[in-house]
Length: 241
Ligand SMILES: [Zn+2]
Image (cartoon, rainbow, N blue to C red; front, side, top):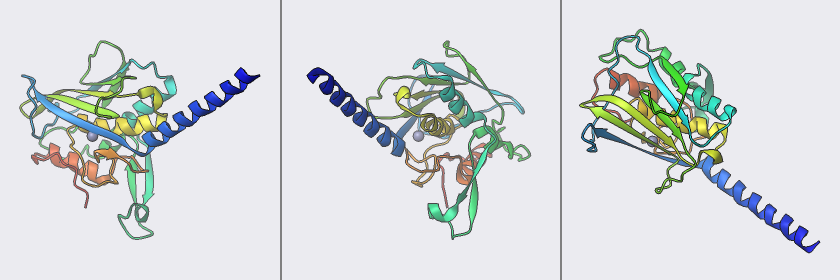
């Protein structure tokens, strides 16, 4: 009897701890990114892909955390979805009541409208995702249960030659503790880095260094930053007006 009630008490405590951790991760995920040249030296510059017109960017998912299929689907959707949501601007303090703006759930949908835009560099618009463990692909997303020593949820390392990205490696930490929605938000943010974006100064933007918005979707200013970067602006910062 005694042992049984002690056990019940213990599992209740465990559940509480888990709930606290989950809430924390839902509110804040920290991200960082780094760009290294071929010599492995960190470089502080703008970078972009230099694809030929129509070229597909190959993305591979390395599921070291053995995440179930629904979570992998959420990660894929953050890249491939054409879905949008409409956000009331007044909720984000970005406009008067009654005005709204469109946010994109996936990068392929967000960038599809830029097809006709003449840019200096071709904006990646077509993504192919495969699952594998050999690290092949232009962008490799590794899902791990490791904890990042700096408390990051996501980290992107891009290897560049001059201002051209050769490969981007995204790591998502403590993946098993994240919900499908959280994994989607972090993937959307890190994939922005993989495309060449730096952080945004706007705390309510997807590309802020700490993702804390209730609407972690691709915004007009994220898209404008991509347009600028691939048009030859030597700037990767996301500026929201
Ligand atoms: Zn980041």
